[in-house]
Length: 118
Length: 115
Image (cartoon, rainbow over all chains, first blue to last red; front, side):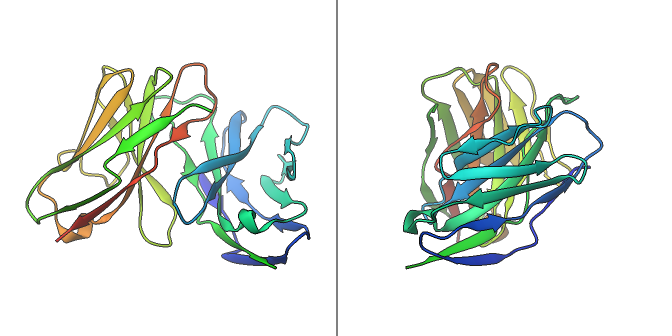
């Protein structure tokens, strides 16, 4: 079974600074997707960034970038120029690219609560 | 991005009754829909995966007779919590994915309170 581990229950960063959220995962699959989701107090899940395991290049979306280390099974999220609106729970998630039996939902980590200090 | 609408956003029901939650994909055909449960300050746990026109696949430990899932069309999936009890109180979130999508899109969630 796949597992996703987020070892930081809470992180705090000053506004305009950079913060990195860590995520490790365990899988026997070679082809899969990794995601970072943001969940603000409204509890709406918002996709922040996505990485395909077969791509060596790290994904980037504006101020958000990842450091994907496939051999180490590590997938960290870097948020540059942190803004007050970035405050939320951040979840790392995994799913295999192909699955048997029709069950291929996301496996989530426990989340990291990100606090932005003004 | 694609829009997924979940209804109701909040529901309170009496113990022993059933409650239905709807999940609709508004601008795409959702061949696969997922149902998650999230307890306060915890992560999302996958309950089941449903493919249009076929029976849902439930995760281990999820009672299929208690959580009935129907995915009768490419735009609608429903989750019915039968004979609800206070321990079923939780936040339920659906997501939907089309054939051409890598990621699934999430609904707004439903806060269920059983009294």
